[in-house]
Length: 226
Image 1 (cartoon, rainbow, N blue to C red):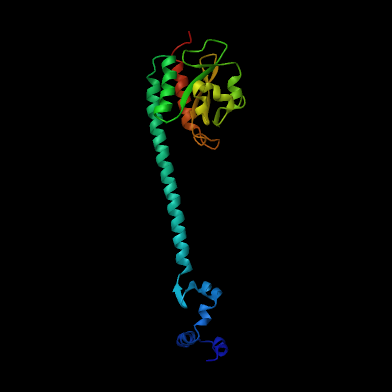
Image 2: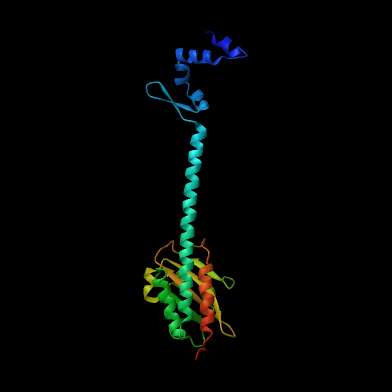
C-alpha cells in the first residue's frame, strides 16, 4: 500500500491501517514519540504495552490526594490529643492550693502530660517572688522574649536557659508566654522546655501555651504575694 496516498485519503479505512501496521510493526516500535502521543510504550521483544497516560495521571493524583489526606488526619489527631491534654492541665492548675503548688503543677504537667523537660513560672522583681517561682530582674522578660512588644517566643533562646537551672543542658527549644499578674501588674512569664530542637519552632502557633498562661495568671491572682 502507498501510505502517502492513504494519508491523503479523506476516509482512512481502519482495516487498511491495521494491515499496514501488521506488515510494518517498526513504525510503532521504533517511534518513541509516536508511542508517547498514543499513550503506549515499547517493551522487549517488540511488544507494545498499553499504558494510557490519562490513567497514569489519575493514579498519581490519587496517590498525592491520599498522602495529603493522611497528613491532615495525623495533624488532626495530634491537635486533638494536645487539646485534650491542655484541658486536663487546666483542671490540674485550678486545683492549686498556693503559689508554690501552682509552680509545682506547671512543672509536673509539662513533664507528665506533654513529655517535656519541664515548665517554670517566673516573675520580675524587685518585689518579693512567690515560693517556687523563678526571680527575674526588672526588664528581663523583654530581654528573653526579644522586645517589649513581644508576647510569645517559640524556638531556642540562650538567654532563657537559666530559667531551667540544673536541666538547662537538656533544653534545645522553648515555648514562652508573657504574663502580667496582680494590680499594678507585675511582668512575668511561663516557659516550657523541650529536649527536641523541633519541639518548639518559630513557625508554630502558640495558642494552647497562651491559654495555659492565662489560666496561670488568673489562678495566681487568688493569693497575694506576702
